[in-house]
Amino acid sequence: MKLGIFFLVIAYVLSQFYRAFLAVLSPVLGAEIGAMSDDLALSSGLWFLTFAAMQIPVGWALDSLGPRRTASWLLGIAGGGGAALFALAQGPLYIHAAMILIGIGCSPVLMASYYIFGRMYPAHVFATLAGAIIGFGTLGNLAGAFPLAWAAESFGWRQTVGALAAVTLIVAVALWRFVQDPPVVEDTGAGKGRLLDILKIRALWLIFPLMAVNYVPAAGMRGLWAGPFFADVYGADAIGIGWVTLLMALAMVAGSFAYGPLDRLLKTRKWVILTGNLLGAACMLTLWAVPTAGYWTAALLLAGVGLFGSSFPVLIAHGRSFFPPHLLGRGVTLMNLFGIGGVGVMQTVSSRVHAAVPPIPPEAPYQAIFLLFGGLLLLGCAVYLFSRDRTD
Image (cartoon, rainbow, N blue to C red):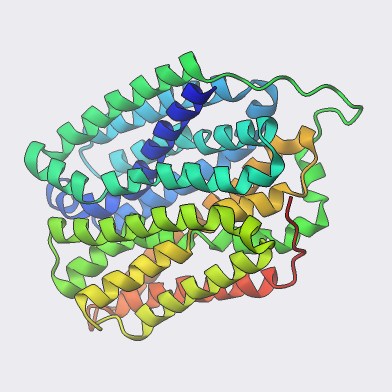
């Protein structure tokens, strides 16, 4: 089981890489195949929307087929195939199709891990384990920053992404070989249950809104808008963008590890989550107010967005505390649908906002995006304020 978890972490590293690498490749993709910022915003949004839509069938598959087959089949066929298509891309449509396939391939990886944690480990350590796997997995964010920029400059972006397609396929084979499915839940009369049974849990409805927006600023900035913002406003090249996104990725790793044990240390989930997201909104709105405060000031504010925007695993744990055991797979994937689906919707919306605002001065379109992201986070916090706290 430990070896299986190890390869699920490696698969999640790839998932984090694929959701974030467009920011670094944006200059070369624009120059070589005409995929501009708005095109890449759509591609990124399609990744997240596809990933989110897959959570419903993935939830069924985890409860019915188990994590081994679910994760290995989808990652190998769709994830590896999508990366290969990306490496051969001749225009924006190829990138759109590739990101859809990669989104399908990555969709079961994190939830397969959470399913195993929920079924085989004590409930009170779920948030810590969930945060740890995101923290380790966010190394993919690191690889998708300066190392990717260096590899693309040194070997070419097509060769780099082609090699990643091969790595994705190898990891999928390892999942098939080493992941072990948890024992089948004995039928207690509750049956397998339905998605509707999760939606009937009223306590979740005050958690879902923040779940839908908490990851939007961190994912949107790290995965897409950080690159164009620093290029257009500060004249940064691919290497400079790589350093900024590396800093943000490191902050996201630190946040994932820090959030995990805080619910046990402070005896609360609600107030840990609420405080962190309010601080993240403050960083986002400060960027809106002073986008030209300086290169490193902006970079540090983005790092703050990444650090405080890493509450995802604790929010999952908060929702999970209301799930009955036989609905664990459907429950965690529904939470993930809200989390990733919100990012997908807002990536496409942010591309429209960016296109609609004239770049005079050049920071104006980005200010509109910063205000959008920060405002949404405040709205999510306002609803979450009335949620019911629960720890294990």
